Length: 115
Image 1 (cartoon, one colour):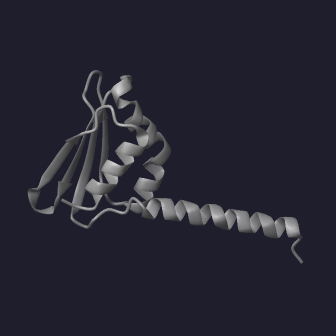
Image 2 (cartoon, rainbow, N blue to C red):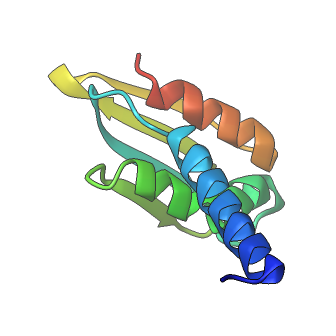
């Protein structure tokens, strides 16, 4: 018989797995999305929110979209920009310069849903 502590551990682990799955589902992309490109500076304050977002959320985004190419491009002095390439040759770019981690996450989610 499992001890109460062991049962609590299993419940906790299930809760962690469930939260992880839910967070990755939040970043599920439209089938029309073919590629994501993110340009940012590796040291500027204006790109800090974007860098922080990817440090914390890359795994969840990639888990939800395992076949989607996600290109993170860092170059000194580069303004932060998010580009989504969709089926049919459509592309949409938006400046994400100076956005917080949360603002970038909102913009990314919007672009992942389609044009």
